[in-house]
Length: 288
Image (cartoon, rainbow, N blue to C red; front, side):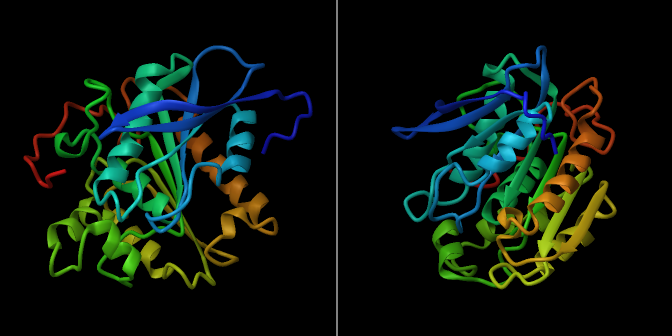
């Protein structure tokens, strides 16, 4: 973690990045103004059970990552029950694509995401479905939503485990009513060999999201990509707990540095930051 007192972080708040269905979604941008040239980017996506909250939860992480040389964005996304899956996922992908299309300070070949709880689901699923035509925003044609690395905290990775009212609100009904949504929204079902390196941290005392969620995703990812899974001290909000923040940030920063320290030839999706390739023609898997 960068603690240099001379570091100057500029925060640009409420930057419009996604115009959709009559709404204007906004993001905050954090950057150390003392550094020049293109830099790696990190998209930070908060939790809230897909139904509540706003950007700002990751402000401390954003400031520290900016001080460590990243351009950091924290976006809004649409909430249930007004907006159901895949609206929030499309919004997160729009934030990734904004970094590539509209932010010249970003190195498009080094772009990662960090998420907590619902946000962890969204960033891992964004990586797993990168450039899927059925799940991409319309605003940035030609821009890739691929990610070079993802770090999920206390994530929901299989919606068929531990159901609650908020998940039903997000997915538009019960598993019996919306089986396709439950499968497509679950990263354990969508992950393939295109997944980038993944860090999964889960609090051992998490009583909101079962720690087995991260264990299940680890099992699914292990044959496919580099995955680092750790059960850590604390409950569901461990990344924001002062007693654990330093350790969590240090682990995350080391992971990101190891996978974004050098430029690749294309936006990375695999362990070596390989070619993202053309958009996959997976058909209209889910109508939005």
